[in-house]
Each structure stands twice: as structure tokens, then as C-alpha cells.
Length: 277
Image 1 (cartoon, rainbow, N blue to C red):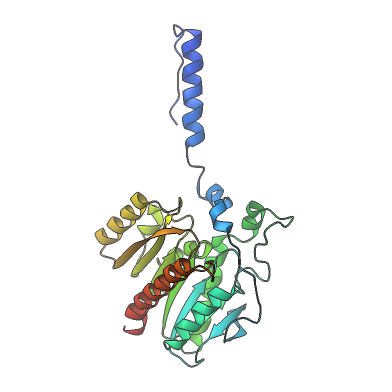
Image 2: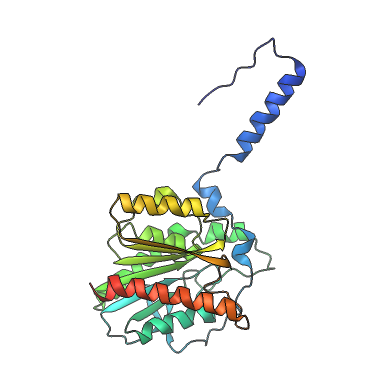
């Protein structure tokens, strides 16, 4: 660790200025992965869904020890794992996406990674407290159990898509051979370090109005993936906010159009690398 030595000849005003400058720089430094995962931008919690346990055209089953919303033919050899944001697997828009995949021949699986405890706004539990219980490392381990169970039942190719919280789980899956390809949609806590170890084709669908994935960072992601010869597709959707793919307003035609475009991009990417391999 570097040490700062104050010279005895520095005047008191200059000493104070140097101290304040050093303190400012220190406070601006990143706090490490654990502290980062403890935080979530306010935009991550905007426009929460109205959860509905009976939404969607599929059903709820237990897979790999977790309850999961499933849609599509149970004997399909191709599966898509959808990893939710903090609001969980009962979000109607998320289940609608699963149904879209099912219509394209996939067995779509949306696990309840939070064991019946999705984040609830205005509750007594704060988001930092909730994230300490429901971290993405645990989500990653649970996701591997779900994929293993799918393989055991005969599925031979799995793709994954992760939204916000689920984007971090998705990028962790992408460094393994558990999946064939992944899509990250407005992901949280994804750094260059994560991208450097990605092994499978990766698409990132990001929002223009999202401080978590600024354009310069996304450019770095693309450069790293290309350097490592990993197929990649990175797209920034204009005039939309973080969460737009699953928490859009149905009465807003512009929002619906942008969300549906992202769904098509996701379907195209995973079809290309899961269904056609």
C-alpha cells in the first residue's frame, strides 16, 4: 500500500487542501465486489411488476430443487433458462417472454431463485438487506443445479438470458460449459473481469439511460470478447431506461415496441447458438 508523507514545511492551508483532496479520491474508489452487489441503483427498482402466480400459459414445477415456471414441450431437447430481476419469477412480462420461447420450440424455464421471497418495495427489508440474503453467487449455484436437472431429463442444449440481477448470474454461467450461449439484458454488476472469462457466445442488450452500463464500458466488453474470439453482439437501445425489457408500461406504444425488439434480438441470438448447434 502506498503511504502519503506530509512534509513539515507545508503550510496549514495547503495541508488542509491536500487532506481534503486525498479524502475525496479515497471516497471515490470502488468498494469491491461484495459492496457493489449490496447496492442497486434506484432505476433498478422503478415500475415494479404486479406479480401474478397464475400468469402465463405454462405451469409451475420443481426442477433442480427449485420451483420454476415452465412453458413449452417437456420433451424438447432444447431449453432456455430465464433468470429474473429482483422481482422474481411471477412477473407477467417475464413469463410472457418464456411463452414466446416455447412457441419457438424451446422448453423455457424461469426458476424461483428467491425461494418465495422476491424483493418487495416499501417493505421493512431494504434492498441491501435483501441482497445479502439473495446474492448472485447463490443464484449461480442454483442455476447450475437447474441446468444439471434439465440435462438429466434429456435436454442436450441450454441457453440463458438474465435480466438486471439475473444478468450477473448469466455472465457467470457464460464462463462455464453449462450453457451454449447467453444474453444479458440491462445487467447489474458486470465488469470487464467477468467478461474476460466468458467462453460462450454472448449478447448484451443495454439501455441508453442506464448508468450501470455506460457506452464506454460496453465498448470495452465488445473489445475484450472480440480479442478472446468470443462471438458477441452488443446493442444500446435509445431513449429507454434500465429494466425496459421486462418492466415496460403496456399502455406506452414506444416502450412496448422497444421491449418487443429486445425480445426478438434475444430469441434470434439464442436460436442461432442453441437451436442451430
